[in-house]
Length: 195
Image (cartoon, rainbow, N blue to C red; front, side):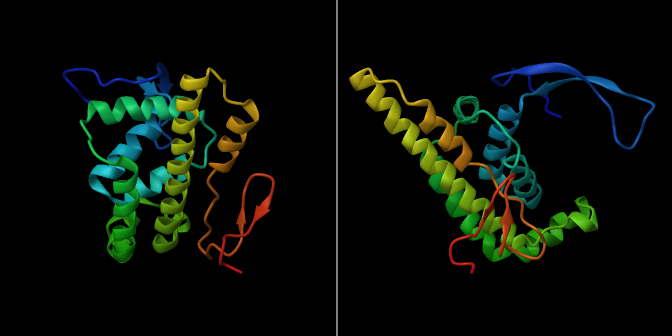
């Protein structure tokens, strides 16, 4: 839950009936952000505090299908709202690299929030999340370059390229056994260097 005196910007929010999985008797109406807004907020939160629960949430949220243009717009609004300056993507990747050195501490401080059967190997989760964020950084750079070309030459980006970028950004599910084989929705891929 968030409480603000001035409302933070968002792309979409709906009022929905929210039921707790633990209590059946008291469903409540809440304003719920779109997935793209939640991803943007979680990414900024991870940038600011670098806690295991944020890493875990963002890792699994990136597994879901979302519209990348809406996500990038929501991220831009969120970064502006929180007054984050500098190289957001570079800082985030750098902080995740530093966090990899503290995975034992991250796991100890976060595991009590996660059911035992769903607890990840934190070193692998942090490394996989860093890899995915680097991929997203490349997608953003391609899109920025593409939008500059569009402005200069009045050329619209191709739908095939946009669709390919969205497919590239889907996040694999990490099993506790490791990153040796990663299964995406319909195909199998091997991680580079993990043969």
